[in-house]
Length: 372
Image 1 (tube, rainbow, N blue to C red):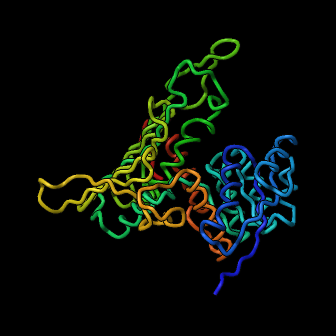
Image 2: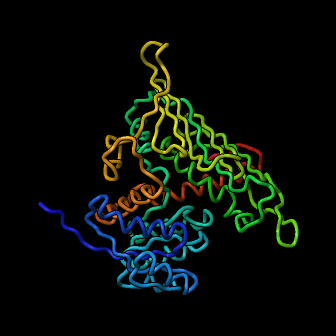
Image 3: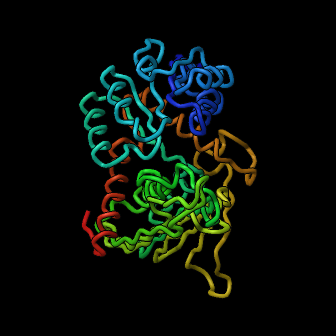
C-alpha cells in the first residue's frame, strides 16, 4: 500500500551558513527517507531585503521577508526553523509556540541559561514539538556507538573523553572578527555545546565538573591597531557523571592542525570505542576478547548495516557527509511533528547543555568543583 504524503510549509529564519543547510535538507529529506510529511519551502527571512530575496531564489522558497514576525504569522508557514544568531532565538521561538507551531532551533538554544529556561517553559506550556540542532551526534558512526553502549557491549563504562577542536583562530596574527567579542561567541558558546551534547547523549547526566577556561591570544590585529579579545579560546573540564564515571572534555578554536576535531573515546570493561569527526565514517572498536597477540582496535567502516546510512547509499564504506547529518535531523523533526512527540535533543536537552556551560564558567571563576 502506498504511503500517504502530506505537504508541510517550512519557514526558515536566517539564510546563511545554517539556513542554507536546513533549506537543502528540507528539500531532500522527503526523497531520502520517504517521509510522510513532505516539506514545502514556504518562506525565508533575512535581515536585508536583497539577501532575503537572493536566498529565496537560490534555495527555492515561495516567499521572502525581512521581518521574522511576518514569517511566524504566515498561515503557509506550519513549522519554523531558527537559524539566526542566538540572541534572537528566544523571541522567535516564543512567538511560534504562541501560534502552536513546531520549532527547530539551532544550538545553542538561548544566548544564556535564562533564555533557555524561558524557551523550555514556552514549549512545554504550548505542548508543541520542539528540537535543538545538534547535528554531529547523528552520524551513523555515533548512532552505532550509542547502540553499543546501551546494549552493554562495552561492559561497565570506566572513563570517557570528549573534545571539539578546530584551528580557525590558531594564528595569533589572524585579524579580530565578531567571534572575538562577547561570551556568547567565544569557544564555550560556539564549540563547547557540541561535545557537551555528545557527552550527555553517550554517558548521561553530568553530576559535577571542574573547569578552566582561558583566552590564548589576548589581542588580535585590527584596522587601527591591536584589538582586545574579550572571550575565550579554549577550555578543559574534568567531569563526574551521575553514573559515577569520570570523564574529561576539551574544546578549542586555537588547536593548530585540527579542522573538525569532534572526537570521543570511551573505555569499558569489555570493549572501548574511539571516534574522530575528521574521519566521520569510521568507528574504532576494541574488544577485550581472544588471544592477546591478536587484539587491537578495529576500524569499522559505516555502511547500510548502521543507523540511517542505507537511506543515502547502498555501498558500505562509501560514506555520508555533513549535509547528510542535517537531513537526518530534518527527518527526526518531521517524524516528531507527525507523531506529536518531540525527539532528542529537545529544547530541554538544549537547556541542559546551557546549564553545563554555566556551571563551567562558575567553576573556572571560582577555581573549584561545581555540582550541577
